[in-house]
Image (cartoon, rainbow, N blue to C red; front, side, top):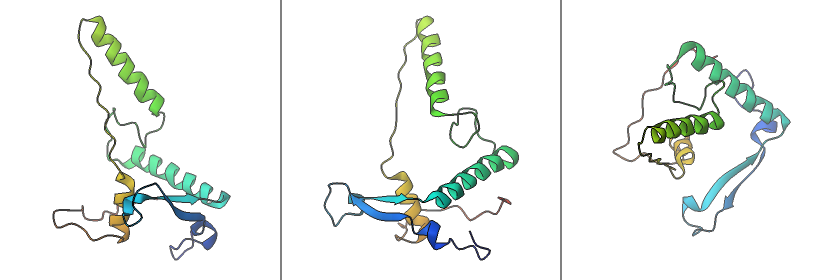
Length: 136
């Protein structure tokens, strides 16, 4: 990233293009954004992710112990291991276990559109005010 806060063309210009997903071409949900980053872009992405995790560890918000994203040492394998241990413990005491998994369709695409100005905000949507918590 340059001093002015803009992304260089080599990072910004990864091989991009919407890949059609088999839905009607007029629907935005028919496309999924694909960006294949070059090595510099991958390094920048890794650096940003590392800085985000470090910031959350140092400054907060204090993430719940059951939050597995953006926490060091907490992977999806750890989440699955925790669920399995809780299920085994419950069943061993004669209890019943029900697991529910939610998949929010296009959650990240929608967030990106809202913050990048790519779509008008619905009247009922409220976004939190921007915060500058000193993210390095």
